[in-house]
Image 1 (tube, rainbow, N blue to C red):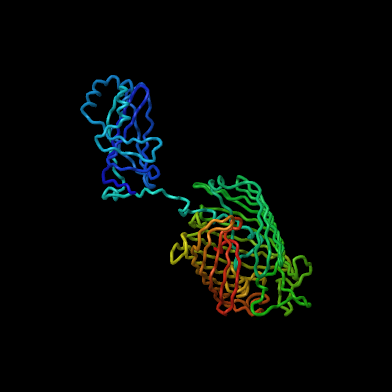
Image 2 (spheres, rainbow, N blue to C red):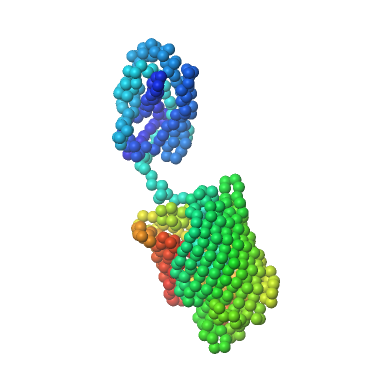
Length: 568
């Protein structure tokens, strides 16, 4: 139903005051039956003090309707107490006999409806108060909307109850969540995506504390089938101690970290930090085949493994709830080998191409980086997906020469993701989103082959295998994707089936020949290409969203990919 009011609405009140009680009668100028569940307006009288003095102040009367704050103007603001009413008993009785009592709403405590009587009707409850010898005094409140547009025309309020769990809301968690499986991956796609941890005071109150454990499977071209187990503990102050172990067909990794989240408030923010030690051992995407497989020498039918061991210290310096700077210092010892636990250093492949920057197959890398990240994204709470907003990251990493490798270089990279709420089509209720992603980067100076920008795979251009499109000193990539709901259901572990249509493009900008060892050209990687396809995703309780993508590239080849978490 709809509730209407005109330019000037009037609410009349009558008070009955006695020695031991105060009665209030309300008279709206409309008459209609309102279900209790549909009431969207409330009126609040200020505190009425009961004292020996004759006058008490009502105070400001406020009205809230459909989320906006408006106020009433009180035209008479005096109440008589019991003592003063006795002095005026004869005068009040005369006035009461001459003037009809105002309209009074009455409702039974067990009734589902509030009844509003026609003007001139006398409410039984007020009659009962009058029989007890209580005096009454009538006064009125004129309601005038503050908004000029509201005053100029008749307004209709829709009074249906609202399910706020379906309303989108802006969340900081896009900016703060550390997803399982990211810590042992130094690079996601062509460049590293930072994962600062920021909380608001509200986040801290709602955040669960204590021990946690998770385990989930995954697979990709470099690592094969593998699993990641995470054990940790969270504290009430935003601190996280975490141990992550990764193992599978072609991978072994471990990351031990301690994180203190940055706390963001309206007027002030604290700096957060993360300290980590790690080892990550697996084949590198740049050494995977494009059109030609290049193995290690000495008859080993193996692709090169890149084994990294090191540590990192990062700071999270928020300038606002949406913008944060991430300075960091990182050290790595990088060994080229034929397996996870093989100590033999192999500096060149079977064709004599360099696999490391130093001649002995081991590089020491020390870098100082600075990244700036901006996130302002609105998420649909019910579907748990981003529906509108912007993500942006720009970073630089300076390599300081140490050890035999003596690498001096600077890596620049940046990315932009934009969400546009739209509805081209869908098969169920829920948000549909158009996503645009752009990324670019370049490497200035000495470039070890395993640090080149790797193109191809689920993190860059789908339809190509991981690293199968190119290995460049520079790159650009772009993605257009339409995400839509397919079915809404809630099972024990799986819910909210969604689909996606996408087009990806990437290019090494002709820079594959400028990489040490030329891993892209030696493996006949095309250097640029496109892919398009479809995806199917479902939310899994302990994994967030799991996506399966099928893509066809511009060379007519197809590829499947399985991803835990949304790509953007």
